[in-house]
Length: 290
Ligand code: SF4
Image (tube, rainbow, N blue to C red; front, side, top):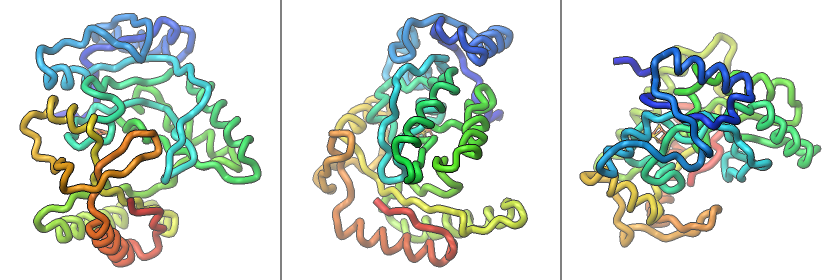
């Protein structure tokens, strides 16, 4: 089975045709025989088929929208970076626990932006505002940008941009282990994951690369009421642990609250992952456990 993301249908904002990438992509998808439709806004897509929430969700994940990002600023991105870098929104994956269930709802179609030069221009301005401090950007806060990289080249361009920016950093190479669940045998399962990750890294790292340059981030499972409602509609047989009474309620940075594990459970998980990090990645930097 091919793991390449090939959309079933593509929507495009007519304004995207004013940019070379937009023009190239529209021509490319037409040539591939994919159904193309213009749309007035990449934020409001109508015409994704499906009679049930599950079917609509699946179809949305196969839908690509080519748009122009017009907002002049970026959202904050605590604790991993100062700002989100909006290269892409959503991802063709269908993980039940996906953290995007809160923000993207039941139709998480994949959006790409063709005005990358303008987006990177905003990044430049934000870097200048924080001088002489270093400013860090996260490229995967609202998406997985890898599946559409073959179409946009956005990551390549962004990495080259940060190579020229002495005071800006793109999120460094690292592992985000998320979401972390507690279940029967969770310690052994995550230990194996860490062990395997360390082995693979040694096998694949370029010569001269040291894991001193690696960062580790650990994010325990959490859910919002909105995400729970969406997940249960889209995945009616979901067995994700989402019982509010078993969790602690906490307000988050974007104004909505979420249900996280109890403090003593969090403490146990935090200590466990700190130990695993020391064991398998002794030189790496643990950025946080939340
Ligand atoms: S963004 Fe991550 S969690 Fe969400 S569907 Fe894609 S791969 Fe899964």
